[in-house]
Length: 199
Image (cartoon, rainbow, N blue to C red; front, top):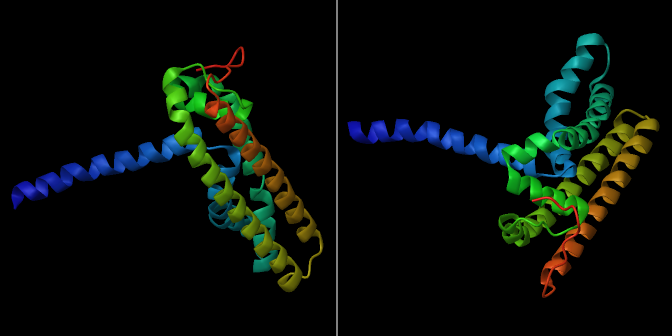
């Protein structure tokens, strides 16, 4: 029994480290649309809403929630820019993951053999994740639009969140187009490699 307890205690840190590793891997390999879908609601509820009430305690819940959600929209572009600016660091931390993400971003087959071997599975995963992220963001936008119209009686927020939804559709369409183009290149007998593509 004591041996079992020791094994369970020893396994707990390993499992926690594994979860942290998977989350870090997701953050480094996921495009901005997926990150926004994951972070938008938690950032709105846990950070945006308390900050708004800290400065204006008279604000109603619906107005505060709409304002907090609007402020949290900036995490999408911020995460995208942070990924682009941390390119060299990301390439050092996770060279295969960086090559895979760059392959989707540039719609080119990577030169690295390991990344090229992982690319078909990564493309299938990104296709599913992009659709899931888009549906999540559209659902959130729809909920916020209804909240603005029915509860807050505000016509400005529906326009803004409608623009967010439209931009998300455009980003998802561009990503899915690149994924489809990459999949067709991989299906070719000799996939072309663009000059300057990095592995």
